[in-house]
Image 1: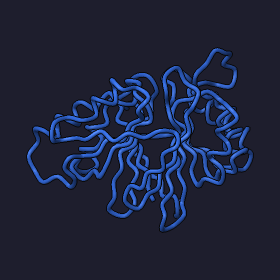
Image 2 (image 1 turned 90 degrees about the vertical axis):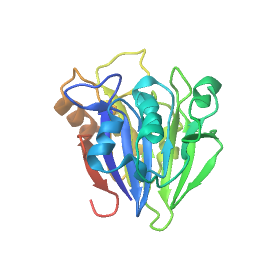
Image 3 (image 1 turned 30 degrees about the horizontal axis):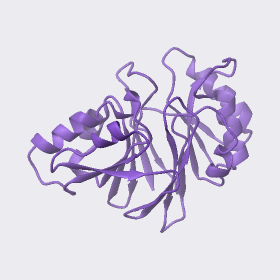
Image 4 (image 1 turned 90 degrees about the horizontal axis):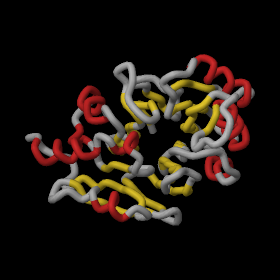
Length: 248
């Protein structure tokens, strides 16, 4: 299983880099996890958007779905063979208005999930945990069945006790790391130290800091997270970064 970072900023794009969007690949199966600003251009740069098998949305904040509408237009207007028709877009059902927009004519089809769902998507199995955020949002645990490799994406969340058990033993933890350690409440995202502590408590093999802030020293952010993880390697999200869960 591989993950390619297409965008990693929280809130808004900056310095030519978009917001949350990640391509998860297992063999020839391609899952787009979140579809933030710039996701479609990044997909075009790395391959054809028509190669997608599915889209998974963790929640409906704009920095996670900004390019969803233009992806739907691409499926409507762009010529060429599509791998899947209609393209399934998985989204939670706690926001009926936003969920309804996932279905677009004959081109995309909304498919609902809840905290209790287990989804079988090609070679992958997905389970969910509702996080603590101003709108319903879900962490996702992705297991590649053939290898047992596990990717966990916290989605947007503040720290809470349920995150570590959900992420237990994962090969890669993608943590919403929007603040330096000194950030004071209220906050709806993890600090650098909280992300590191989560990785350590979960026994994660690696920590990827993502949903990054635009106006913070990212070197300091990474150093604070590394101090909290101990020996667990910490990495900052980068444009088009490709991580192989088996070989890296």
